[in-house]
Picture 1 (cartoon, rainbow, N blue to C red):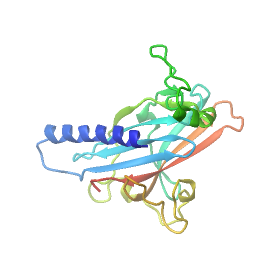
Picture 2 (picture 1 turned 180 degrees about the horizontal axis):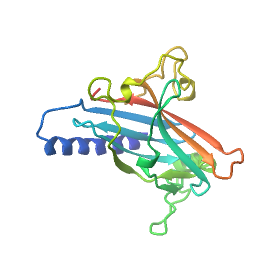
Picture 3 (picture 1 turned 90 degrees about the vertical axis):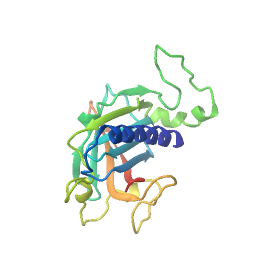
Picture 4 (picture 1 turned 180 degrees about the vertical axis):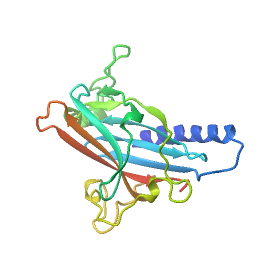
Amino acid sequence: MKVFHFIIFFTLFVLSLSVTFSNAHSKICPSALLTATSEMDIKGQMGFYQNSNGTVWLTGTYQYGFQNPKEWDYCYTIQNKCGEVLFNLTDSLCMEYVKDSGCDGYDDDNSKSYRKRNIFNKRHEDKCEIGPFGTKPWVVKVGDLTWNCGDKDGFKHQDCDGKDIYKDMVVDYDSEKTPKRLAGQGPATGFYLVIDGQSKWGKRGTSQSIGVIRSGQYE
């Protein structure tokens, strides 16, 4: 996942510099950096950066794990640990899917394919057969989404008191507490990025991938 981390943190760093030099007025909201890593059936990461104006930028890429987008629909939502949907990101992302983006190379007429040329690709071949589509990298601004801006403004303040229904569905969790802190990532916030898949033909076609939203260097 080091490649994903580099792409996301570099992009967010550039965005933060851009905001710093383009805004002379005082801070309104605390700067915040969050990440949500999917490491099981879907492989990839999404980064969230909130600038001092409260604007949130999303960036990232997914390597593999998606079915054919012509046959499946995917929904991206931010949820708290009780499963309450706090924000639907699907329309804002306008995700572009690419076949074999992480396992066998880009299947693109404008570029040379390098299918099954090395050990890394061969090692993930079985996973690609389950979900061979990944995504192209993206950077989008979501104007009506905030993490923590003012008095209880933002999804940071929309937690719940119930049981965490997702913590045992992610990598490296503590059955008595919260998902463990991963190397190079911040602590769990109690919120999740949930990717739900639904076959357009409706024949046993559903999937769900859970990514822990973790706070970064600004929080």
